[in-house]
Every structure is written in structure tokens, then in C-alpha cells.
Image 1 (cartoon, rainbow, N blue to C red):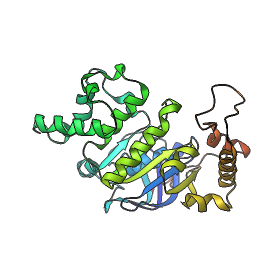
Image 2 (tube, one colour):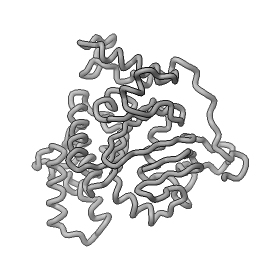
Image 3 (cartoon, rainbow, N blue to C red):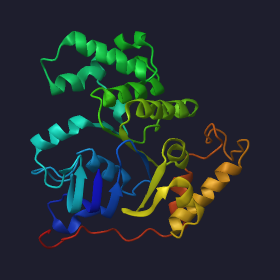
Image 4 (cartoon, helix red, strand yellow):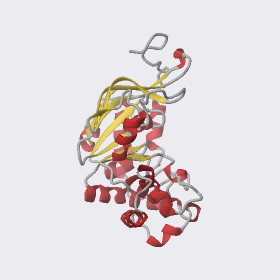
Amino acid sequence: MSARDVSIRYRANNTQSRFLAVGGVNLDIAAGEIVGLLGESGSGKSTLAGAIAGEAGLIGSGEGTPEICGGSLEVFGRELRGIGRRRRDRLTLRIGYLRQDEAERLSPILTVAENVAEPIFRRDRRFNVREANAAVATAIDAVRLPLGLMSRLPHELSSGQRQRVALARALILEPALLVADEPTRGIDALVRDSVLDTIASLQHDRVFSALIVSSELSVVSRIASRVVVLQHGVVVGDGPIDEVFSDPEDYYVKGLAKARRLERSRVTPAPTHPGTEDHQGVQPEVVESIADTRPAPKPKKAPGAGRSAT
């Protein structure tokens, strides 16, 4: 995928209240590459990830939905700005999208197998049931879950197991691009690394591209070869992880680099408040807290606020 000076805003009936979530971002993801998108809450990372997954830019979408209002965003050579729903639906068959709350989106009345198979039958209602069952079993096994869980309901699983089911569902159509937004959020610290390692192993075996979105530096460092740092809707760092954090100029990236050095220097956990550390002794909110060291900027208005958008 390729983004060139892309800007994304949220639609509003009042043009003065249109909010620019992403402003002038350039980003490329090569075939077979894993890129980490890092930033605290409100940085625009989930908005950008959703747009790449085809969740923005639809003609005729209503108020409160994101739209690409500037620049160009191409996925598999197709321009997403202003794309129609039918063309978008065809394109997204090649994209696996793991939303932040994807595990909670699993239907409570469908079994694990039925939840994972749903994208297959949404694509082709006449798909052979036996072949679908075989594909589901392969997907469940690939995310390292026992096949015996296929007949269970989501509420009978642990949070880590539900996240793996959601991952299997996102990959069931064997996409060429995986967009995973906070893939370890809400998962017990003891199994976070295992989920990330599963994604990395599947990516290695199937050779798809991946965008891993996280507010946690440890997540991106574990799985990605390259990091893009987003702050207030703009890219403030982009490149191989070691290079980005070796001698940063941006104030926010400097804070991340300091946190990374602190993380590496810790040999044993030493939490101030019991229960707030993860299994590596790193405070999960370390990335979020960096933004507190400087005043937040004034809210941005979308390009064209008060006039016709160009």
C-alpha cells in the first residue's frame, strides 16, 4: 500500500466542526513487510489503520464517519479516496482487518467454527460447507488453538483464546495484507508475546504484508522490522526501529527512545504499584504517558472547514 500526503477527517453536518484526525501522512508498506504503527491514544493511528483497511472514503457515508479529504491512499494499486462500496468490498477481500475490539465482535450465538467461517460465506453464500469446515480447521490450528474448541461459544473461551479466534477469522480468506489494531489489548500479559509470535509465524509462512498498530513500544519492537511513529495525526518518525530511536530529533520520539532505553536496562520488574507491570517489567502505559510532558496542540480543523473541500 502507498499513502501520499493523505489526510482523513470525520464528517459532520456543520463544516466548522469537522475534525482532522490524520494530516499529510506518507506511508508505504512493501510486499511481505511488517510495519509497526506506534502512537498514544488520539494520535490518529486507528483512523489511519481503518482507512488502509477500507473503512474510510466511501461515497455517501454519513455524519461521524471518516473520509479521506486530501492526498492519495492506494492499496493493491487501487485508489481508496472516493471509492464506491462495491469496489471497496471486492478490494477488502484481500485485506484481513483485526479491529481493536474484534474479539468482542464475535457473535455470542455462533460457535467458534461458525464465527471463523462467516467471512467465507459472506463472500460466497454457495461455498461448499465441507471445504469451509476444512479451511476453518486449518485456520484454528494455525493460530495454535485446539480443534476441540471449534464447537464452543466465545464466552467459554479465555480472552487470549478469543483473540486467536478473531485472528483466525481475519486470516481465513488468506489476505495479502493484515491490519491488526492493538492485537494484544485486553489480553493477559502472560500470553501477549505468544499472540504476537503467532502473527509473526503466520506472516513468515504465508508471506503477507502486515501493519501492526499499538500504543505499546514493546509490542512493536517484538514483531516489526520497521516503525512509523504517529503524533497528533502526523508522522514524526519512520524507519528501522534501531535507527528511529538512535538519535531522534522529534521531542515525542526522544521520549520513546528514553523509554526504550529504560526498558532494556531493566533486568527484573520493579513496579511502583503492584499489578501494573507486564511480564517484561515494562509499564504498559509508558507510551501513553510521554504525551503528558508537553502541552497538547489546539484541535485541528479539517481542510476546507467553512468552505468547500478540495
